[in-house]
Length: 248
Image (cartoon, rainbow, N blue to C red; front, side, top):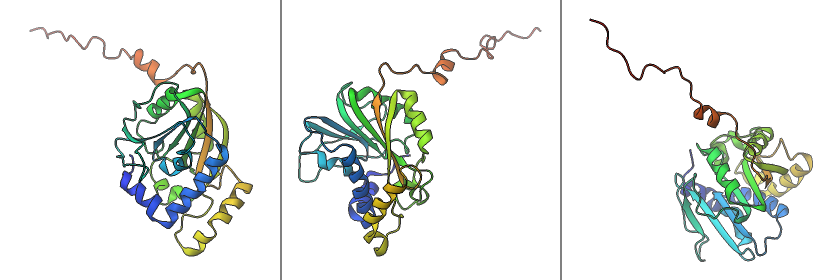
């Protein structure tokens, strides 16, 4: 289930650990996407801590927040770009988004396939998506005191396999949050050093979050499994719809 928007806001904007986490993840995003001039940028879940650097140069910035989470006005002091959205139907045009960031929107959703379907639908043919999820092998997924301790954490293989099934092709992965999830002065002071060292050692196992960049496969791959099974239901109940009376 999704976290409450007020809890997410409190963590990222009112705690020292949350601000350090915001900075570490945002630095990686900006390294991947340094320039979005004239492009359409969207976030889903609670991606607003990562969207602020793009407000000035992007053609459009939209922050979609799922209904179970709730929405808040953002950015403060500027025209609001945050929108309350259904997970299964985003208020965006098909093929309209050049850069899409999903954070706290996939691992906490009970409809993760629908989230990925909408991600595929709105992403432009030449666009890029970035999925940020808790790393199952990292320390942050084991701490309930942060948003990354909720929902379903992923391994890199699990996430990339899921994305490929939808037609979102992984092209690059990086990690972030190499600092421990501890709000003590020493660890907060050394957070930048930990991030720098961590990126040089491992982008796969050590970080608290996995970040996978994707492109859109056209056409989308055929679906197999449950949808086909539903269209061809088992016939084990045939003959029971019209019961015959017992002979007297």
